[in-house]
Image (cartoon, rainbow, N blue to C red; front, side):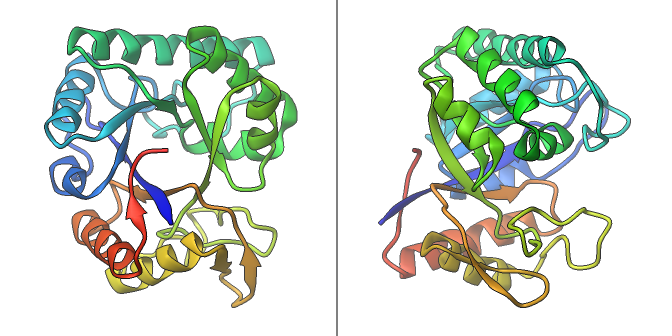
Length: 249
């Protein structure tokens, strides 16, 4: 069995440091780099590309809503054309930064509210997929398992990687719990690692204790979760112990 282990990184900007990119990067196989709208800036984007290259990690764009003060986690209601342009702009920006370092992007993963809204909104999902395809149809689209974004990526002719989140709580319908809810963020390295192995095998335990099916081609570790480096190490070691190879999709 083989699975990708990704992390959301490059989310510092200006004078503000955010997340533990240096600690997480040695343990993941894919890095989702913020593109300057919800977080990140040109300098951070370039330094994060270099960090990923140093560790042999595949890089991808992590586009979000243009909402630095809300970290891209507040819903915004844009037209499909606006969403398509928003995504194409950010993917294009990181494509250029990566080219300056002699690297090609491998994937795209929407961030925060953009990601969660696209999981349930077919029009938004389709706009994201079109924005990705317009820049580079060879990019893999990361999308929540069982979501509208999976379907939209496939309709657009993109290769899609179904994603699961061992460090996040799940509702009974397979959606991610709002971060404001108790139990929405899992911070115990041992617990996150056990959840990662279960997800690789096709199940997730919800906050209410139900076991539901999930497809996981890629698992996400959030670089801004407290103790992110210890979590990433524990997950990587647990996957290895279970005989699961880690590598980009």
